Length: 114
Length: 112
Image 1 (cartoon, rainbow over the protein chains, first blue to last red):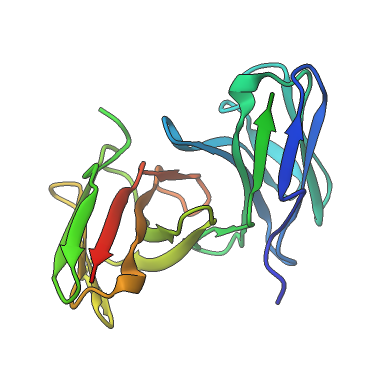
Image 2 (image 1 turned 45 degrees about the vertical axis):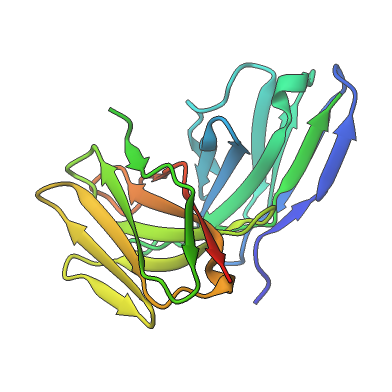
């Protein structure tokens, strides 16, 4: 089975530009999570969806960040306008609803804002 | 108190050594626990779940102490390939569908 697929793998852009990160969860998984990882703060949960509906976005740093899940097989995380402090690795993960299942991560997007 | 706290590391051990990592969690209602492994510049991957009775997978043993809200991971006969960051992960609520909280990780370097 295909795992969680993220794109792009790397993104380098100038501050002020819009950045869109994409994620395709594992087929059949009901939950989708967006994380950000930095050396200083570790892995932080930004937002998660259940059946395409945002459940908790309290981890989204500020209004510049937005996330959507228009269908069960696709989600986006958008930063507009981007700032250098947004530089991090952004991971998408998915899991099945049933029981205490672990999450499966995509390869991540390494984002650098200049 | 942070939700999940781990030994900061790094741990530098020779091949063949036994090494143990510790982790504490703050939410007594937590029901599920995992250890993930993350290689440099890679995504976190599930290493093993942690069960109340303790569980073993080859050279790896995980233990849970609910009374002390403490989780451990023991690696026996360390291999060079065990070098990675080990993340302690806890489900923060009493439902299987509440988010997982990740510790910052403990870095392990196994030296030849």
